[in-house]
Length: 289
Image (cartoon, rainbow, N blue to C red):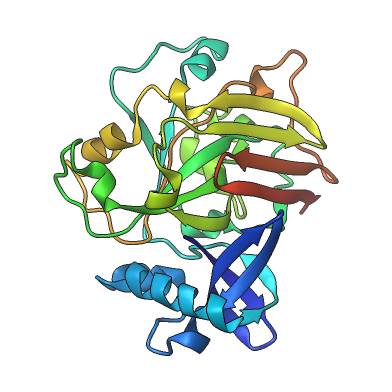
């Protein structure tokens, strides 16, 4: 099942997504089942929320309960945005970094979240803003001290993400300013959909790519992940409780702009398209402040 948030003339609505022949139709879930919450995030917080949404989706398809609007971020205000660095073997090699022995973790905040078509806004104080295609995990239920064997049971689904990074702040400031380099407004667009785990299958076997102005810059597979989703969730939940709607950016493959010769950084007027097999394409324009 694919779920999305849609901005309509009647407001923001959670919808089921029916994709046929590369065309998407959106089912108004709350028009079918009025007891459903008004966001995907709140649906995930209900123990039976995804099952209710799926039932509403099936009825809505039969009734042709379609609506139109503009796609928004599937999760707009996550409690936690957790990110894994250096998690593709080839990316570690291109940056001349050692393969880590355990997941390298950092965080973003809700101010970074954008959706399909939303602007990536370049700060005036940064001249080295980079792209990073990433598979994003969306947590479906509270998770604490989870084993690797059980970890995927806590995943609601997946979406496409772009871990936009100001390299001149991340690494070029005194001591390195990872937090400031990773957390400018608009620096974590996600979407277009939440695709549920059952539809995705093995998250470690997905093609992932990024195009900048139509030119492929990153092209890999999640099979190159150093630490899989199970290991990441088990590692994080040793220390913190993950909540429904929390996001985990799982790392980026090789081909980032900072590692190229010559280096490539985002500029106003650029278009960034991140595509992940089974999840769709996330497209975002780049603008100046």
